[in-house]
Each structure stands twice: as C-alpha cells, then as structure tokens.
Length: 523
Ligand code: F6P
Image 1: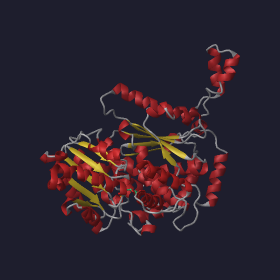
Image 2: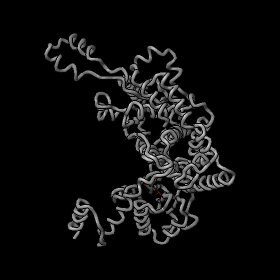
Image 3: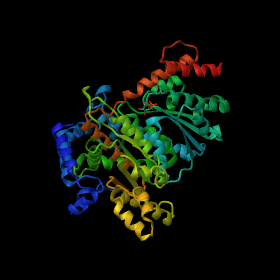
C-alpha cells in the first residue's frame, strides 16, 4: 500500500467529523454512497468516510493498480503465483477463460444437468448426504439454505464436514441407505476429515447394499485418480480443475448436491447472478464499482481507522451461514502477512464474524454498541417476504434498519439525562446510571439489500464478496488464492495421530502431556 497515500488518508481521518455530521455537510451523500446493481443495493452512507476520503481511497486503488490486476484476472493469467495457477472460477459462470476452458465448463455443465435431472426424475433417491469440508462444504451449505427461499427441494439434504464422528453420525441418522445418495466433495481428495467421513458413509452403504453400494456413491474432485483409488467408479466421478480454488468452487461440480436438490434451472440462475456481478466488476469505473467500493470501505476501516474485525449480520435466516462462508472466503484468502514477493505486509484481513439478526441483538450487540472498540457491520437484508408472514418480515427489517441507525447516531449523555429528568430520577440515580445508558455512536455500517432472495440475487451477492476480496488482496499486495497457513497444523495432526498408535515423536511438554493423557485413557 502506497505510504504517501496512506499518510494522507490518516490525516483525513484525524480531522474527520462524525458520520451524522457528514450527512449534514454532504448534501449528495446518498447519491455518492449508494450503489445499485441488478437486485442488489449497497448503502455505504453510514460509513465514517467523507467524500474527500472516498476520493483518496479511489486514488489508492489506482496507485495499487487495481485495474491492471483486474485485467490480469479477467485475462486468465496465472495470478496465483505460489501455486503457478490461473484463477478462473468466473469461467464456471460463463465469464472469461480461453476456448479450451469454455469447452470443459460447457461439457461439465451439460453432464451435471443431465445427471441432476436423471436423479430428480427417477425417484429412487430421497436423501442426499454431501460430504466435504471448507470450500467443499461452506458454499453448498449456505446456498442450500438460500435457494430454499424460492425453491422447495424434494430431497432431504444433509451435510457432514467435521472429523468429529457426530458429524457423519448425525448426517446418516435415520436415513435409508437404499434411497440415499452420498456425494463426496474434495478438490484434493486427500483431506483427512472428508476421507474418514467418506469411508464411514461407504461402510454404511456397503453394510446395507453390499456390492450395489457403488451406485449410491458419487465423488466430485480435481483429483480423479485419488477418487478412483479410493474405489469410486470412473463414471461416478465429476471433475473440476486446479484453476478453481476451494473457497471459490461452489459454482463448479461442487454444487452438484444443489443442482439435484433445487434443480439445474435454479442453479443456472445462481450462476447468471454471479456472471452479472462479474460483468459489473469488469466494466464499471472504480468509483461506481460495488466490489471496489466495498473493498475500499474495508481498507478504510482496517488500515486507517484501525478496526480489527468486521461483523456480518444477515437479517435473513436463510443467509445465516453467510458469516461462516465469508470467514473462509476472506480470512483464508487475505489472512496473510507476506506480500506476493515475500515482504512483510501492513495490516491485512480483519476477523470476520457474525450471526443472524435479530438473534445477535440478544447476544453480542451490547458489545457492538458500547464495547471497545466495536466493529464495522455489514447488514444484509432481503426486501421481499418469502415466508408469507408480512408482520414478521416488517419487524425483521425494522430491527435491521434501527440497529444501523442506532450504531451511527448513538445517544449522548445530555439526552440520556434529559430523559431521566423527565422520568423523575433522583440526581444520585441519574449520576450513577446516565454514563451506562449513553451510546457513543459514530459506529460504521453498510446496509446491503436484495430485492428478493432469488437464485440470481444469491449469485450476485456471493460474487460481490469474492471480488471485494480480490480487490483487497491487490491493495494489501498478497496472493489471495493460496492458503499455506493451513498446512502446519495438518502435518502435526498426522504425526500426533500416528503417535497415538505407538509411533515415536517429539513435542513440547504441553503437547506431550496431552498425548500422554489420551494414551493413558485408552490404555
Ligand atoms: O484446509 C484448507 C482447505 O485446503 C481449504 O482451502 C479447502 O476448501 C478445504 O481444505 C477442503 O479441501 P478439499 O476440497 O481438497 O477437501
């Protein structure tokens, strides 16, 4: 990040007025800070950012060559340099990619559609158990909930991700193996959790179906050989490719369970929604560009104002897994401390966290309003009532809008005291309570609204966040498409597991005592 520009931004922040004041000073604030694209509207006006700050952030984006990197991304260059790979998940939704890639994608989409239709038509299967973890789980899980707003699935769709036996046990509980389709999703087909859960599911099928079990077992992977040596028949395997990152893979065959459960048409609309956001990201100028604006807002909050986290609060039950999904998308992509060329970075990705509204209001909103330092919030709301409960829906949205307003306006102590005087409080009670009832305000938030929770809008929303992550990665100078930080723990877990079976290993005293504890228990 350019040091000069950063100093300028810091200076602007030091002289900043409150967000409420900005509304008074900037008569065009709503025009300048609200962007709409298709079914999605994003209101950044309640960010603690002036128009001047926004302009400087746009210069920062130019300094960091965001447009150049965007072009390289759309051109399919190998921007995942540490793994020497192109990053082509947009090609899965029909944007970019060379002729060979487009052909691969087209053929795979036809194959997936035909398979999904066959399963939907022949009625043999009643349940789908999707086995996978991380990018092979979080996207499908989130989107399964989201698609349910507009389409009813005739299947019982369950997920098993954790290596904790409870995960696969719960997923299989009460199902009939004969009418259950197990879909194992793993890009690498080496992931410990997925392989163990896949083995458990296969045993469960084989116990009931014997040699016929294979017909109920599908693999989705970029490692066909790995799946075959696991015992999956070649024609039961659906491929994807190394140019699809795990956390960007829901658009690929990884979404097979969704295509079966909700139908290939709904899935195609989901892809189209993402493609429309890709086109917007590619074509809109930086100042009018939703992902760019989201990214710059995040940079402002993280690098200039110093916030350490971002809360993502969907006021939509069917998006309740959004923060979990974004934890992987954002933190695995940009949770880095070295630049692409191995230098130390400045501050990069904040902690992403959150839960659905209104539930969060009865848990962590106390901290958001009065805790230190609080966190910027992304509120996500859906304008259409999909549940035919208009009173509930209005209450849900009223809460969402109120929280965003409350975070911004706060409640100064003099207002609290005026209210307490009017309510007849004694002076001593007032002195005791007034500071507690005061809200500092000036806490930033963005409100993203979707006209409806259609498959198209879902695709739009997820692609928006993907591109935001891309832009932030460019500004922070990191490779957003590798994840070396997950490796060390995996390696140690493997050797500790072997030691539980008697192998020798060396550890610090704390870890050695823990291994000993388990060995003593199982002896
Ligand atoms: O542990 C990290 C990770 O490699 C993620 O990047 C990935 O989404 C997840 O594991 C699952 O990997 P796979 O799809 O290869 O099983």
